[in-house]
Image (tube, rainbow, N blue to C red):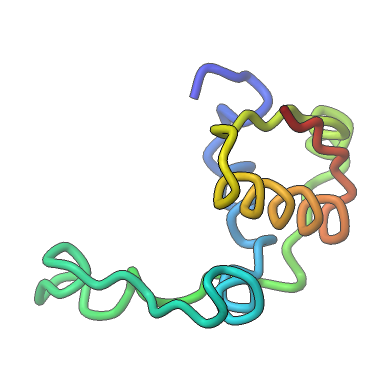
Length: 104
């Protein structure tokens, strides 16, 4: 990414951990779609690591990160699936991290 707001790896990890992807998959995305499984997720090195849900309800930003990331813009393609994902990300980041998400 080119945005300084999310250049820090720890910030990106926290953003990722704050998204309850499994809940979204089960309740919203194609009503219980199965996880994608492919050659990368089935090597002897990764086992099932790519399939686990990284959601951590205790994920939080540091005070300085909260100041920097109080607001962020999210740009997605203009189609139904992308808008559904955009809505999910916006809601989870706002609820779990207090980030206001500006959408396209």
